[in-house]
Image (cartoon, rainbow, N blue to C red; front, side, top):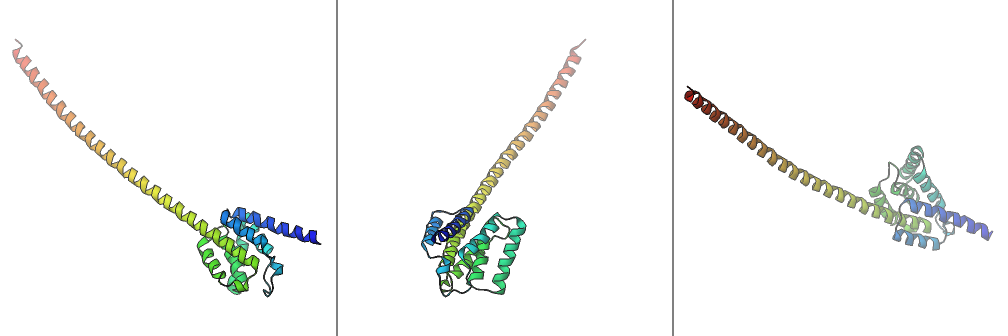
Amino acid sequence: MHRNALTVRARQLAVMAVVVAVLGGCAQTRSLLSGMKRSPSSSGDVGILGAPAADDYLAELYDLAAGDPATQAAIYADARSGAQLTPGPQTNLRFALVLATPGHPEADPEQAQSMLREILTQTELMTAAEISLATIHLKSVEQLMVANSEARRLRASTSRATQTQEAATSQRLAIVEAENRRLRRDLADAKEKLEAITSIERSIRAQDDP
């Protein structure tokens, strides 16, 4: 019996490790995950009737991260419907975790952050596993948002640098083209003068010729 319990627990932790790896966990996430491993399992929580077990959340997140577009769309639609029709810490947490998971079209870190922060103000209505999940994913989306912000800043900086470089190049080309036009005009003037001198010389030679 004890061995079976350890096996079930090991499977739960293995699924958690997969989800955290998919979410690109960091040192803080691993620290929180370690804390969750030391926490009592959701089956040990009392007074939270109808709260899903941690592996229910994790199994769905794994399907969301690894599933095809149809599976992802079905999970998103079901989670959103649950949060809208029967709002509560569990249904809102489920929907927030779906929004926080990258890799599907409906991922929304900003909305997930807002929902997770609100959910964590209701910890008295949540199991220890749910609190750990909410905390881990809140840290994840916050770091993802920081990374996205930095990426946007770098793209904007690169774009400005490119625009500045293009403007400088265009200015240099305009100067070169203007100089070429001036040189062409000077060359045309020189040709006209040379032709005039050549014509005068011919006329003089014709007059000197007996």
